[in-house]
Length: 367
Image (cartoon, rainbow, N blue to C red):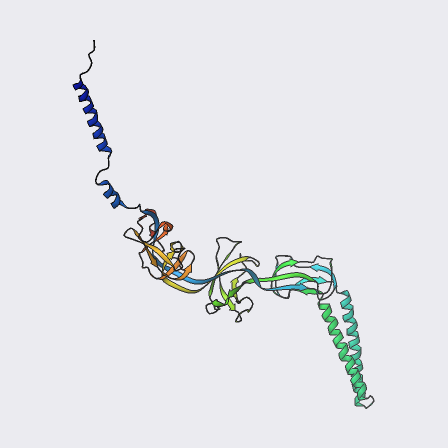
């Protein structure tokens, strides 16, 4: 038989439970130093990537685009009419100036040349006899002059007939490559009809329309770098051949003609991307373009100093590819932020990612 607990035992149990609750509350409650530690910790550091400011060669250049054109081009036309008896050139064939490309039927021209030659010989004989008669005073001076005039006219007609006969052989006016052929053996050719197109690919040219502000910097003889869309990854070199001295008033541009060696991979009609270097600095202080702040009117970068971001105004110089020359504001060895700068403010704590701390520039091979 169980007996009811006494009041003293109940009070003892209550005291034990109460003391346990107090101990638990004391463990969960804030410690006196927590607020102060949180205050000292401050905001979290912003992770960033940096590049080390260094030196490298950099060039000032003008860039533009233009198609490649042959140095010279000729449309070969027939200077007389006739049937094409033979065609001696095909598309893609190299030809030289004066080489016969087509032979036309010259029967009619040959007859005319023979007829005028006979007439000329007859008049030469008549003129020779008249000179003898003139010495004997048997013919008037007026008759002598008329015979002389007729003879000169016959000689001119004969030269014209022989010239027409020579046109039966159509020749190449320039040396080059046959780019187009519009004739086949047996075709009847009308006078002045284009039958061939020849291009001289020994040298190719690109014509740039350059803004007038560049007139003082671009000169003949400057080196030119070329890349064409048809040959990705391949580079070609040339030079500025000539510069037009007149600025077009309508467009505000002047013409710069760059020349390149042909006869290889480059062909007329290819679209080229051209860069003309007009100045070179071999030891320029540079930063990546990605380091520049985009939201500032004046150029500036964030430099990491003592794990804090410091905004530094800079004066820029030449630009080339992904690099910008810095003329003042930075020194070699400074670490500039290239990624994560949008989350930064002046004095922000930063955490530099270890894989990003690479030199901003390394020496490059000579061009």
